[in-house]
Amino acid sequence: MALWYRIFGRRDFEVSPPTVMAHLAAAGIDVTCSFTPPGDAWLAAEFRFAPTAPIRLERFRTEEEGIRAELNSWAAFLETCDYEPNHIALMERVIQTRQLFTVRKPVDCSDEVLAERICVKLCRFLAEQTDGIWQADDEGFFAPDGSVLLKEY
Image 1 (tube, rainbow, N blue to C red):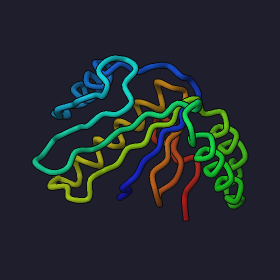
Image 2: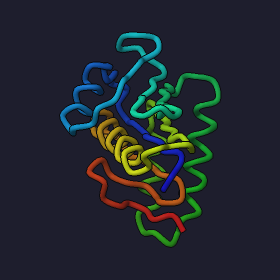
Image 3: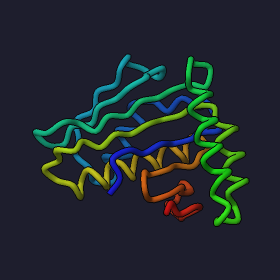
Image 4: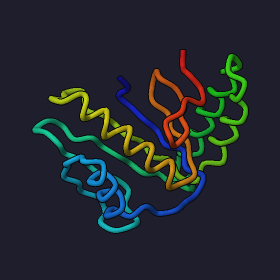
C-alpha cells in the first residue's frame, strides 16, 4: 500500500472544504477534518480517524515556487515508461497540471484499511473535481474512477 499519493488537476477549480467533508461522509467515512487556512483557498488539510498521526493533504498551485520543477520531474518519469502505450498522453496530462495535491498516509496507522480507503477516496474525488489523474507510489497512475492508466513496475 502506498504511503504517498498525488493528484494532478488540470482545472484550478477550488474544491471547498464542506464539499470534501460531505464526500467522505457520503462514503460512510467518519473523520475529523481541519483545513488551513479555512475557506476555499485552503492549502493543507488533516483528516483524523484514529489516535494516530492524521492523513495529510496539501494543495499546490503551479504558480508556486518549485511546483513546475516537480511536475517536470513527473513528466520526465512518464516519458521513460515506454512499456505503456499511453505514457506520452499521461506525460502531457501532467504538464497541463494547474494544481497538484499530495496525500500522505501516516506510517503508524491503527487501521491501515481505513487509511487506504480515505486516501483513495480523496484522490478519486479531487481528480474528478479538477479534471485530473492521480498516482500512488509503487502502484501507478489512475483515472478518477480508479481504472489503471499506467502500472508502475
